[in-house]
Length: 262
Length: 262
Image (cartoon, rainbow over all chains, first blue to last red):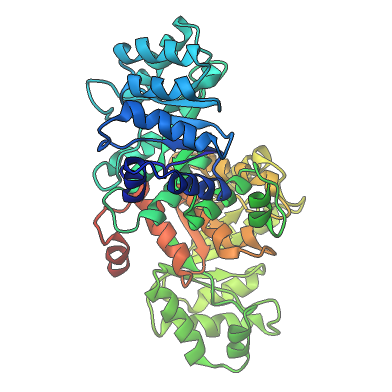
């Protein structure tokens, strides 16, 4: 599992304040904590409260690059904000994200190619959030077709079937899981699959339990990557165990420790 | 999920002693605890140390029937022991279990019919434990064919793909999970599927974590029933959440409590 840490996000009070005050130490501490807990990459989001995302994004990228060479996942709904991050990035990058809308794909695919960045494609469009598996597959196909057309390597594409909170879209959970399996056979070579995990438990009282249970199922369905909170130890224990069960980690009596030392 | 509590088993020291000493209270306490934790049925196993299983089994059945009318799962490798339990059972019963061997099926299927009992069929045979999904499916087909031949209703059959400990058969876990999905389409109407869960973590250091992670995946693959420890609260929380995600329980903010009060 390619784990992208979600905690560098201006919507969190500590990060929002650190961005405003240009507090490098706080940002770097958060980055290092996530990496030590097992993150393979770090999501970077200025937060919607940022008044100057075009300046905040490259500042964050530079501050984090000082302490790690792990990939950075540049997270904004505004392509211009993402581009400011790409301009200063020395680490590998992942653009988070495009939708299936042609206006977005027309801007973000050339950007991803220009900066040799991977790209997350979320199966939503201006028409709204898909209501079932077929609609997810249709949007995924639109994204894949556009990648092929524009010469963007499908192996650098992560498709996100978008999971809604279980308290508002309980009937769609199974569709999301099955979409993970179906996205992987949408083309040859396969696109990768990804989930923004925490969304599934939004507004519930037992967030970690719902997150880790859903993630276990997603692993069973072949999920490649997730954006999540690597500091949630129970979540990480569960993830390591889920990958053990599907034979992606080798068993030893201390497999949890062994994975973490890896 | 039809939950069968596993704790009335002579291999546990307290139960082994209680059987020997004819300590009704200890047995009934264990039964009531499991039922209050969410068990829908109770497994009853005299344990291999029992010197007089033909007497112990009916004693256990009668003692437990005094305090509950939930189904009893008569667990022995010896058909004669199972029959002694069936003779005195007033509650619904499940025979645990037959293998795919004709000698066993020839005895246990008529017994199940005679006593209107459900039957667990484990996909093993005298040739040994299956090594992959195809072998599991072949043994499942043998059991189903025998049921059809002998006029035993497939809806009363639970097929168990047999899960081995992850520390000795890590490469087979995915096969077991996929077998669950395949067993369900082996005939119309479908047989039910069941797992003896605790086996998966035998000999490991983090038994509950491995149990609940594997169970979550099995739920995603459509498992109908499991023999497990209902007193493991984290396991039960995970199970309730897994069934929430696949839309078998209705969401409310206090869904864990609500399920337990049900």
